[in-house]
Length: 139
Image (tube, rainbow, N blue to C red):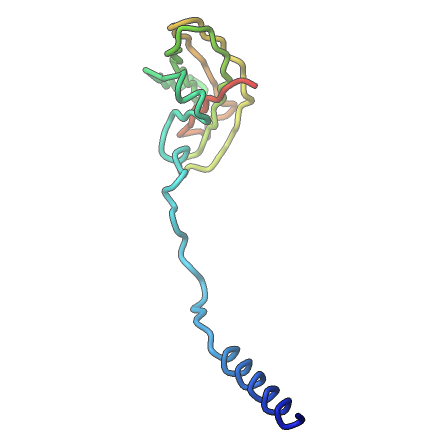
């Protein structure tokens, strides 16, 4: 009995040593899927949920640089449905490299049946170069 326990212990120890010694770790790993769910870094207008994707479109965006260097952005939001809807919109102003400089609060926008309305955002400083207008369903 002692010989069997000794043999089983030796086998377990040798398996633990053999399996624990070899590693396949090569250090740092490159990022994967960097373009998946990364729309806000590429697009000027994004819809944040399925309801907004179904109901709202943006036929045009107008950019204006004010005399003091601030960026003014006006987006035309269009309701695609035959009912009045309420959505919320905000704008994320970014620098030339795409880092957030300013994030405006979400504001309520009411869209009548099959109508369009303009939503205007103005940055608070002259460092903004890019932007993303974001629209979501109002909750």
